[in-house]
Amino acid sequence: MAPARPPMALPPRRPIDEAPTSASPCIRQCCLDDADECVGCGRTLEEIKAWHAATDEERSRILGAAAARRDARARRFPDAR
Image 1: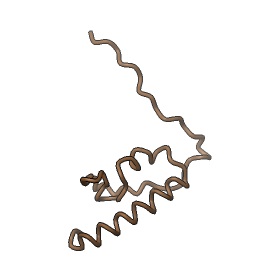
Image 2: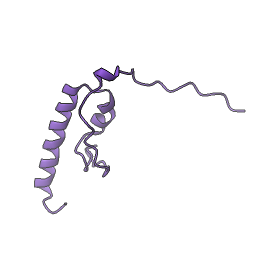
Image 3: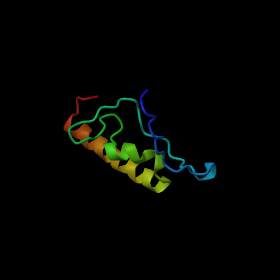
Image 4: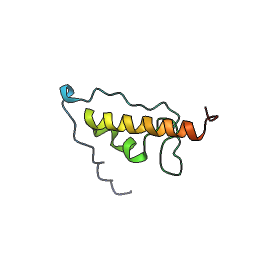
């Protein structure tokens, strides 16, 4: 019989009234490019991993940076979508 694995560490939970109000920008077209940026939502891998624990201010910054990356990608590859 294999030894039991220790439980996974989960991020600390926030009270419901402190939960961020920003919805995830994920559009379920997940594919990371060579810079580890999602070609669907525009977030970096680090931003995707940090999203669940991010504050509203952090999420707002992530959303702005992701939008700028999507716009830059659209200018570089105008026929991509």
